Image 1 (tube, helix red, strand yellow):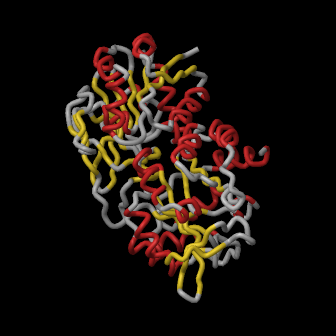
Image 2 (cartoon, each protein chain N blue to C red; image 1 turned 90 degrees about the horizontal axis):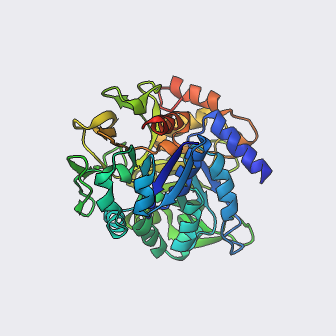
Image 3 (cartoon, each protein chain N blue to C red; image 1 turned 180 degrees about the horizontal axis):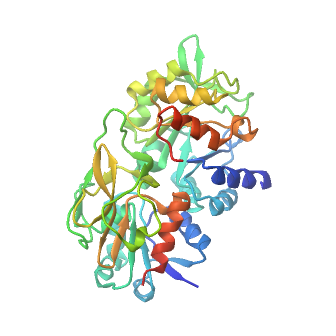
Amino acid sequence: MTQAVIIDSGGANLASLQFALQRLGARATVTSDPRAIAAAPRVVLPGVGSAADAMQRLRHSGVAELLPTLRQPVLGICLGMQLLFERSAEGMTECLGLLPGTVGRLRAARGRPVPHMGWNQLLPTRADPLLEGIAPGEYFYFVHSYAAPVSQMTVAHVDYGQSLSAVVRRGNFCGTQFHPERSAAAGARLLGNFLRLS
Amino acid sequence: MGDILELAARYRDEGADELVFYDITASPERRSVDRGWVRRVARVLDIPFCVAGGIRSVADAEEVLNAGAEKVSINSPALADPDLIGALSGRFGSQCVVVGIDSQLTDEGYRAFQFTGDPDRTRESGRDVLAWIREVQERGAGEIVLNCMGSDGVRHGYDLEQLRAAREICDVPLVASGGAGAVEHFTEVFRAAGVDAALAASVFHTGAIAIPQLKRALRAAGIEVRP
């Protein structure tokens, strides 16, 4: 049975992620114990809420210190992806610094409300094992007010008035701005791809 | 419960983009939505899941989110305690906090109503709908569902005029609710009122409109939807 741990970053959306991994036949436990995380074959860093709160929790539990030392696949989701960067404009928070760059605030415009909530098309910029079997233009579910700009880390982007990073990767650290656990069959495919990484 | 799980699975398979569950009698009965129920539905759903019904505190919301909901929607509790909106968005982020508004035309104009799940306890909150839409955004609501009660259950179409007025002052996602009876009603509410999403219940429950057919019609009309 495939296994993964979900880091308890204090967000409240852990159950839906756990259920999604269970539907794929994976055993996923929720923990903030650095030893359990270090020993896991795959690590998911979810996150809902504010960057400052989440970073404070990760520092307090020792997970912030542990994360840069991990060599197994790590997947940040939504705020979890944003935390992989150096800093976030949300409260000018120092983040994990595993990926270069700063996460910025989305600007609202007519026909483009913030938070950005809804199904948008994924536009791959380069091939990645995470995107295997996922057709360009497939829809994924986004819910966010902050985003990472497109950079060399970008594997796929999304257009929401501007081009934003939707999937990023640097080595074993990857992330999705959207919620794969709530993105129907396409999201399940991506999570399944993650569970096959080693 | 069996019926609800069956419905949830059916909507998931038919391509619904979000499932919203309203336990509409929870607030008038001073209850809060059943967490075990939320968990059972969340287990089978792989689409966004929003839950409403007597969520009166941060602790209530935390339990519902921990049970697998993505977002909580508050209506009567927000009218009773507007500070709840800020407390929830401060703790979980505004993207987690939906404010539902039941709007009805009175002699004083459109007013927000409370406890609409029970006709005997339904009451006017004393709040003007547009003023309330402004206020809940300032307080941190990340989405607004405007349920136009005059249209609700009548199936003559969404209240385009009221939704247009709401859109003018609503910078967060706006969801139209109340009145869907035909495929054209969905097309016109996206076109004429510029809403971000359209919610419907009875036409889907009864099978009067099938979701795949609706989505094909919306795409044919040039409205972008997930296939």
